[in-house]
Image (cartoon, rainbow, N blue to C red):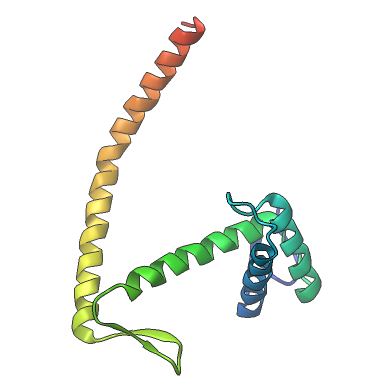
Length: 148
């Protein structure tokens, strides 16, 4: 189903920085009011945020899109924190950006490329073990339930 109207491109929600900022502020207020549980936001929180964004920006977002956009921001925040911990990083108050001299940047990129290659090699090894584990799990379940 393809959504129509402002805020959508090819059925996918498009987010302006104002919409993202509003969403983050809204959810921050949910946390500060004590409504959020320790296990995270509930569907009602995402839906009420979607309703508020829709009213303010004349969009047609739903709670699931709010949840997904929050995940995107969580990944960005994690990446920013990883970079901030790299030796030699600084902070530019004027542009609100992390700074890194060329030597440290090149070292960081080189380390990340090696980590991605290692992760990809590990994924290649994990898949067969996962498949065996799933098969074994299914077999144990069948035995436990008396199935064949």
